[in-house]
Amino acid sequence: ISSLAVYAKVNSMGFIETPYRKVTDGSIDLESTPQYLSAEEEEGMLIAQANNPMDDKGTIDAERVIARMEGDFPVVEPNTVHYADVSPNQIASISASLIPFLEHDDANRALMGS
Picture 1 (spheres, rainbow, N blue to C red):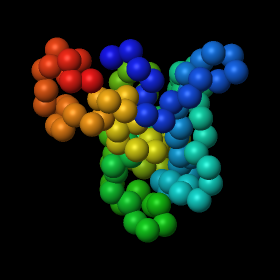
Picture 2 (picture 1 turned 180 degrees about the vertical axis):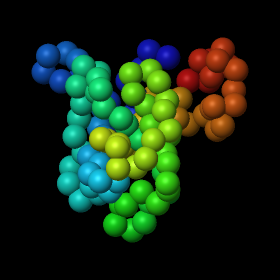
Picture 3 (picture 1 turned 30 degrees about the vertical axis):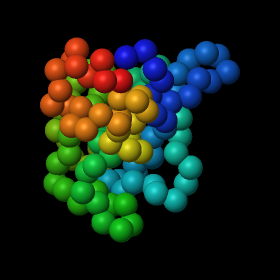
């Protein structure tokens, strides 16, 4: 699918950036504006999924969470996470995010649908 992701933007240098929320000591900062990071800036960062259980203040309410770091998906403690996604569907384009149960579709079918 050759469309920009839902929340992605192109910076002044022509690189694609996507938004993340800062995580400090296992607490997601829900108050401030999300930070846009490029792929280069993401290197070495543990990024948690947006759908992790959390309380009203943004504290991650789980002993361990699935994160991603440079193509790997380690299970880590929340206090080691650097950033969290802003939305579970931020990796998909607008047209792809409208396909119900996209994760269960065959790749060719998903491409045709988007």
